[in-house]
Image (spheres, rainbow, N blue to C red):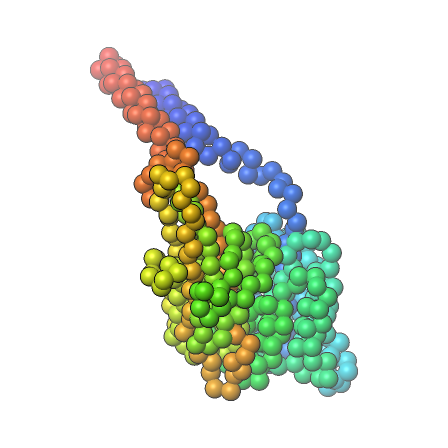
Length: 421
């Protein structure tokens, strides 16, 4: 009886393995090197004396940062090299000159040893000054070399205390080097002066600023930024949208960047031939303080203003980027000479700046355009949404049928053996 059960289990496992091998052949080589450049992230943490303040979920700011770092270290993708740098962690005296040199590499940017990195984080104790500018310069050195993406994630609870080395100027200097380094900033408590400075640092390098008031928010945001570093590096092309479709630039498949003023709309044109499908998405980032409650709208319209399809998304003030997308499959034509259709992509948003915040330049947006063969092209199934996935269903159906026959045969055999015994 036990031998029969083992045989049945073995047969089912073999069938499952065969089906998985047929349906997902790429999985066999998932562990092979892809040849892509390695992404690097340097987490820069403020360990100044103010991090002792107990105002984040009933605990200290330092405790919230340690908790977030431990969870981020557990979740860091294997393909990302990660390091940790501190500022204000070692010098507790009153000499500003000495305090403004207080930045140290806690863990080098390298393939992550999670246990070693967590041990290093556990030793941190709020101590001294807030030398943000010097720390950013050293972090840029930490990330030097290599062709992959480079990202600094700065977490602080206050503005820099080491003027005249302005951290905004430091960020602009880093951006001017043209090394593709992005600085994202997170402020642990609401503070107008800190928010202004951290926003300036992020904006200088195309990064983002986020205000964080809870430990869970800090963990989620840092995880998001580390994961973003693992994405393939694609350099967007600058495109200047127009106020109306007739004047809009014509875009091909690719990634584009632009800026959109508050209360403005931008148009872009895309040519879509019969049998093709337009896939477009847009992300608008709040790189400065904005009022809660906002949205982003992406519309595909004809040159005469008729709406074809739309995508929209809303935010509540807890995210710094809002994204939406759309798909438009253009039916095939019996006329081989049928011209392409001009589709106008309209981007608009409902962000509004808070009092005292500059409204220029406009908010940064990224627009992705992809014109591909439609679902019914080249013998694919015509049903929208199935596309090239139809062959997978064709494999799984007979595999399931075969598995059912074998399972039925094994079950009958088991009953016959049981009756014999």
